[in-house]
Image: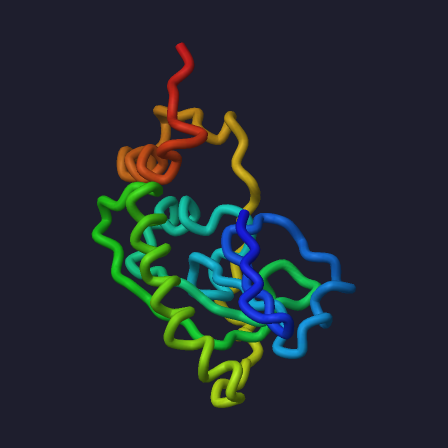
Amino acid sequence: GEIAALRPDLGVLADYGQIVPSALLDLAAHGMLNLHPSLLPRHRGATPIPAAILAGDRRTGVSLFRMDAGLDSGPLIASEGLSLSGSDSAPELEARLAVLAAGLLARSIGPWLRGELVAQPQPSAGMTLTRPLRRADGRLDPGRPAAELERQVRAYLDWPGSFLET
């Protein structure tokens, strides 16, 4: 994960993957911001990119939010979406979302610091939670529909990968 302190009164995190202690969240006057690779509140948690592919989502994106003590539950500052092709793999989608996130941050940070953007609570409708992946998640079940298996293979590139047991 990465932490980038842009100013003494602001912190920005992306791909951090850990809960930040609540004592640190209010140290910066402008807060600790996080870039998350989903359109929150959908796919909060550790694995939003594979989750979007597994679910067959037609749209995903990135969200910039002010962190609170919860898991990706803080108020939203800005978000931007993109359409999924239905053939995206996790590495390809991660690269596309990284570019989208960089642009969103570049466009939002100045207005945020000037007080021109106001963080809004996340809607409660549509919230989903992802969990860290395990190697066993890559096991393919031949009894499942082919479309689900195909999404699983794309979602779990590069890790945990996909495999059949014989």
